[in-house]
Amino acid sequence: MDGNGRWAKKRGLPRIEGHRRGVETVRRTIETARDFGIEYLTLYAFSVENWRRPEEEVGGLMNLLEYFLKRETSTLIKNKVRLRTIGRTEDLPPKVRRELERTIAATADFTEHTLVLALNYGSRTEVLDAAKSYAAAIAKGDVDPEDTSWQSFAQHLYTADLPDPDLVIRTSGETRVSNFLLLQAAYAEFVFLPLFWPEFDRAAFTQAIEDFNCRERRFGRTGDQLTAESTDTKVATSHG
Ligand code: IPE
Ligand code: MG
Image 1 (cartoon, protein in one colour):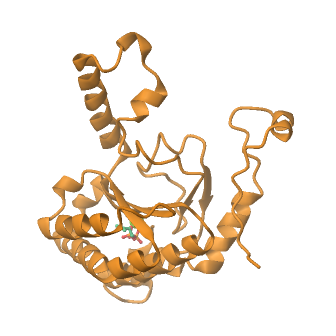
Image 2 (cartoon, rainbow, N blue to C red):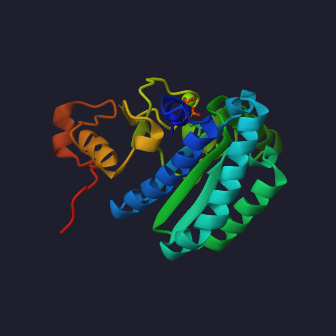
């Protein structure tokens, strides 16, 4: 989710106003993802690098997060959406942690749709945390150092129980990954949109999915092999 600040600046508004509008886009995006039958939606809401922003903006983002959780929990419950987080959430302000814990507990039993908020998230931090945890498992004798594998290492990532993303969308016209799910997105398709996050709507989401649906995902194999085996991950964008 990128471009809140520039969206506001273009209109002569304070950056926080862009973030406010960004929250509305979040609500809309969760709804659209649910309508499309997308099982996992991950939103990169706050990175480990975002602490470097002015204190006022960081505080504003934390307030918005608290506000979002307070206001949206009932909608998540109504729509049977489970909330999860990835990132070092232990370093978030206590009031935010409290709301997160509350919403996570209230939605824990839903299985159909999962909303993952990446909060105080960074891939490199995640890899460090995972390496530490993997090393501890090896030291404890739970993992044989001669028998390491990506599968067993991935069990130590924040995303241990989450599937890899099929599609990564970045708004705002930037064409960078910015420390987001670097390992998990090894085989993801990327869509970069020239829209600011507050402008990302159902039509843009639909377009991104249709673009994704047109791509041949070979996962290292040849096109001919794919015809023989089905690895289809296409998403229907129209119903009825
Ligand atoms: C939203 O957009 C990103 C966050 C949720 C922190 P930005 O705040 O990065 O907006 P730009 O890039 O300055 O326009
Ligand atoms: Mg930005």
